[in-house]
Length: 288
Image (tube, rainbow, N blue to C red; front, side):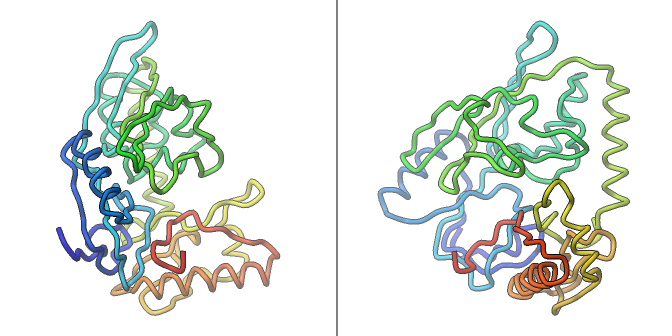
């Protein structure tokens, strides 16, 4: 597809057009796409569910490769559970739900994180004391050369909201080691996580999830609240009244308004608390 508005494909519902939006149908199609873009000298980015991205209103003169049609999971029995290879484009929620239905535990505390498996690995997604890297064994990465490489967990460079996955690379597949557990117990954990998210997070508005990383072991929302910024608006972009580390699209917000609000938060938090916040959300096309 040509000249596609990214506001249709991101959870914040803002963003201008990209030159091409490409949907590979399988892994080989993805690798062919990468080789073609390399040969044409065209810049590209990867997109899953678009839940952690804000795209500039002016768009991007690039190709965006959306991996959400590449969905496959292979389960193999091990001594105390199963080894599972799952495609990076698979919804993380759907994967956790499928594993739970099989009585497999290890990822249930990440339930309702809205991105893909690949996106979760790239940012080492975590919640309620669990991290996606905990049960991970290895990943297969695809790069600009159109080839894949297997990387073990120990070589992934996992840290707080970070990994070694570069913007030019894509997690094609990941292998997890999950263990058996009582299904009812797994479902109780998932219900608890969902309930807490529903209470704490502004799920009724479009957003890109948590905007800033924590600092010194403390969550960013504490500093934003201390700076008195809850409910502050710039145009249609607003600091959530429910959770101060969320910027929500309260109605017809633009990417520029979101970015201006991000800058305002960073500036005023530093002025009032001395803390420098860093974005967790990815900003595409903003003077990169």
